Amino acid sequence: MLAEDSVLLREGLVRLFDEAGFETVGAFGDAESLLAEIEDVQPDLVVLDVRMPPTFRDEGVRAAVHIRRTLPGIGILLLSQYVEGAYAQELLASGEGGVGYLLKDRVASLDELKDAVSRVSVGGTVLDPQVVRELIGRRVDPLSSLTPREREVLELMAEGRTNAGIAERLFIGIGAVEKNVTAIFQKLGLEGSGSDHRRVLAVLAYLQR
Image (cartoon, rainbow, N blue to C red):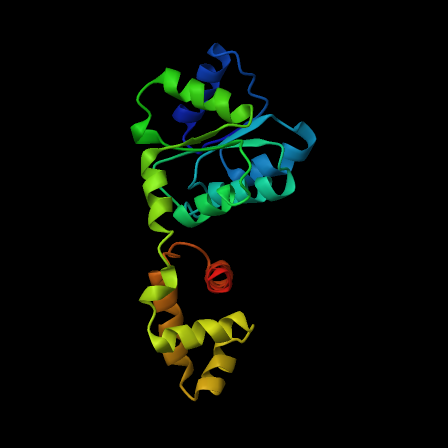
């Protein structure tokens, strides 16, 4: 199954996969449409763009994480122009194979793409070197750059407190809390996702540390 919002690229990939001996059982312009049918179809592999409608932020990669959690036997190949390090790390966290992440501009040949599809569909792992560098960079303690106040705010976030609750606990204004929360998101590299989801990822980073 394939989800890619560019019509030209989507149709081109379908033809490429057909020529390579793969059967495309569904091609969609957004991740939501793919997710609506994936359980019934049960494909061997899903190819996803990272940023798709409606917001063009991280729909594809969030769909990939969802598929990995709910249908772990399905291979996932992200084909994108962007590196979403936090999500790539989550996809690989289980240690299981069947995952690939390639950057569109760096796929040197059609044979390279065909090879990636073949390897991921049988449980292999294929990562663009730039994605690997991003993941290695994330191995450095992300909390080391936080100020003492930001660490206090993050600790209270981990306790499940709202911004208002944090403000009351630290005797500061809600505006100051929001400023610290925004700084935490930025320093942990969590830009570009919904605030609620970033809050969860920030707390997970704290708990892992």
